[in-house]
Image 1 (spheres, one colour):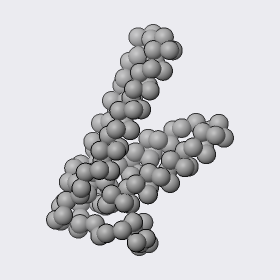
Image 2: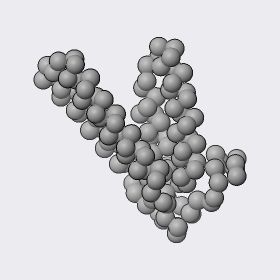
Image 3: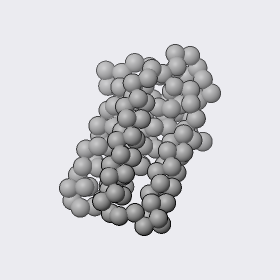
Image 4: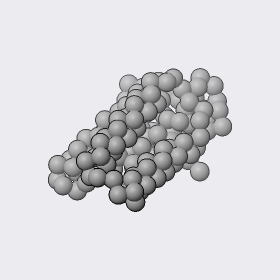
Length: 127
């Protein structure tokens, strides 16, 4: 189990780095599956920092997959499917912004000690 917390500055720095990597992959024509990886790697420790279970990320990914597969099985036209996918991306983006805006818990929770100030990647600290 991942028992790790990250603060808001570290979350936003991680999002910026992952976004850059995903943009490079998209530019090279390698797809954008990295978005779900980014959601897991940054979202779980951020959820832990606000005192929530990381399984909420799994619920979001499962809901996304369920909607897409259900629409494909229903024979939804490609234009409608693209529109719904764009809406899902917007919704997930808004959730990511919310996750980066809400302050973490100031006290120890079941996922560890409160985070320290500044951007931290493991033992590396950028102030």
